[in-house]
Length: 366
Image: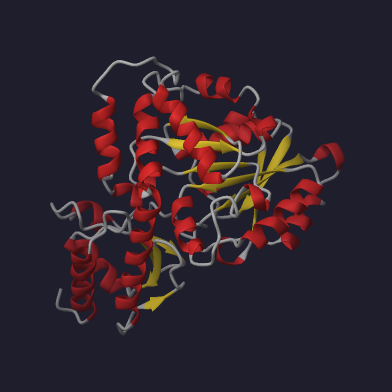
């Protein structure tokens, strides 16, 4: 797999002045209106600092209600910190973390999990469509030779996966049962957990079904990709593992003194349902984009979209023409497979403009 951040030079040299010519990432979208309004409201008065405010208490209660269990939630500034600190609570430094070979914790976090765990080794494993299977995990558990190889300490799953696919509750349960039987804790990287919930709701699966009821011990619930500003939630369902986690957050420089600004955003989207509504919109826009691409000669969909990612194979000439036009997206699968991400802010007009330009690129008139 190519690095998702490797852009052809033309992308950087010929970017359009229009800021909406992008399917590069759901990170590129702005702050959603509910979160922005909450930030303004939180700015209206002085309140206790470091999370001792009523808004933070309310946010914690909303997470308990969302997951229908007595979970413990912590807020950090970004997904890298969320994953790395969560894994540091699950693994000792002589242990290992089993993950998929394209998992974000291995490919895109600059060694942060290893750093914050104090040296836990990541063991990347293969699997179709970005997913692990019990057979693959079981085989990895027998690797090594006693104390000469890191002892497995955690299993990390990504939901939705880097290929935009979903683990079903049954699949998570099978993996979690295997992990727990061998003494491993289960971590879920949920940078796009909201999108996974939106897609799974059609099958009657709740956030609880996708997490603690299926055996997940800790979830890193993404806020940034769902329209929030610098806030991610680390949700412990196994509260024993959260012991002293507040100290880990503080030591890592992730404790916000003005915690209410993070908490208020979560309150706004959880109370209003915007967290699921925005994810549902992003998923629907991806399906709309895929439907338009599917009928174009010279374009091949590499996966049917399940969440808010579209993976398509484009001809080199068409991709180059789109980059020169100012469109921004990343190579991701193979030599000519590209990822196109939709967000809470992706409009029909942007999709139509992209498809129009792609048609012109394919016939050589762009």
